Length: 208
Image (cartoon, rainbow, N blue to C red; front, side):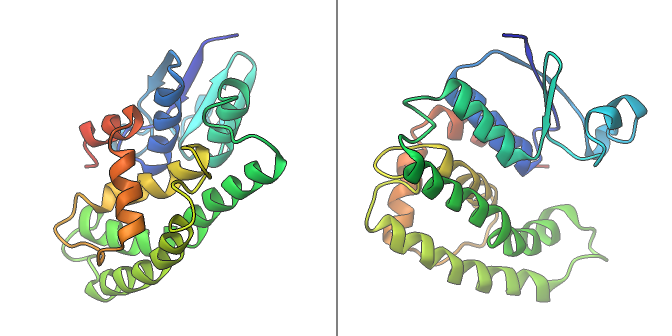
């Protein structure tokens, strides 16, 4: 197949999801810095690829795909049979559920915390939003903890694509001095993920 090109800066949580998937699958790819201080995303050439002007964007020959979860699902489907892609329609749907949950329900508290703590200027920083993020995030993580009491991974009995979005967000939040209250099953799951190459790559990259 054609060479894979990934557009996006490594400090973007959405780009980091794709980087994790590519690393887990052992795929060769070319990455182009885009977004944030790198610009590029408003250039006409890039907007032809992704009219949203956002990252990540994956290009493989004539095929172009944006939206980070869609990219992870595509990579799992094409290259991750028996690894990132769970077996069977119901197992895949269950993994999809956690991908979308992390990117919708948990993403709001994540943004409240991370944007204000890392991206915002002192004048922009909102302690109210940070506190709200920690409180709402802690409540949501109890849902994941309950699921992980019944199975070792959000994807099921083995690691898969359903684990990547939430773990990517938690990895970013764990670089901050504050932390969520301990949750035994979630914490054990996160510890297992730290042994994986994808997580180790994220831990080596700056979020700033």
